[in-house]
Length: 169
Image 1: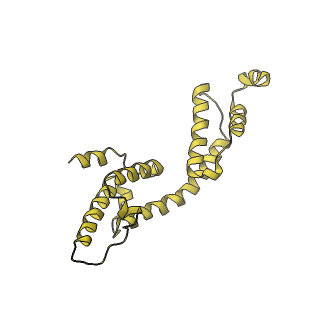
Image 2: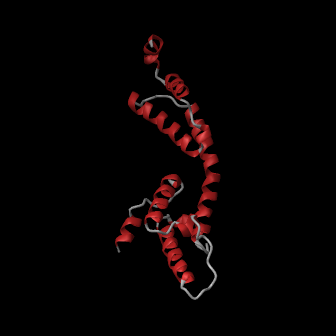
Image 3: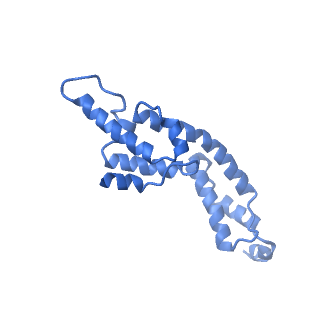
């Protein structure tokens, strides 16, 4: 029963948290010695044999599928409900979210380009810009925003009363 509580501690996969979920699930599956049937060297079902290898594989695959299916929101479960192996389920999410990542990346870039302080405090504004930049680099490391550009974005979106300070710096 202790295993169920650990899986239950992973926030369920939804449309917004794939990277975090995938990182946590991979660590969990590795810790439970189940990763080999998801992303390792045991992803395909072995042939029937007399030494019990097939039975052991089916047990590991069943545990991995249980972990995957119980850590996703109901609407995400529909994508893997008929998956025959844990690898197929994992790859389904990878494909699904890599497509969504392109759209999310575009939305983040648009948000960043139109970013302005408005009614945020300086700290909130800095945090918001840095969070968008961090998420952008997580989605696509080649699209990471260099620090000098982050500074220009922050300066550009500051309220007018900070213009004198910016000019002095």
